[in-house]
Image 1 (cartoon, rainbow, N blue to C red):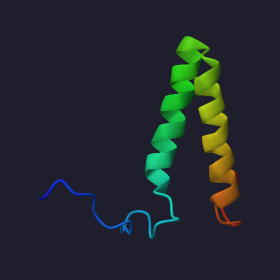
Image 2 (cartoon, helix red, strand yellow):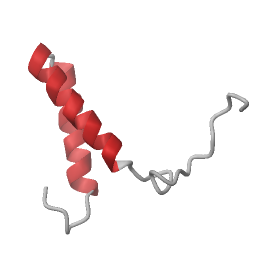
Image 3 (cartoon, rainbow, N blue to C red):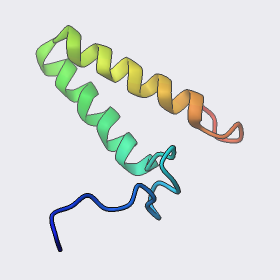
Length: 64
């Protein structure tokens, strides 16, 4: 290991413009919990943007 960033492609994300769905799901769950505890508007904004990304990126066969 050199400490240098690895290639942008990952088998988890499928490519540089992909998304690791389980990681995104954990992020959404954590942000929802954080907002519930703090009522922080910045957390809510990030949560909304994360959910919006998921809804826009999910295949049509997955219900939102």
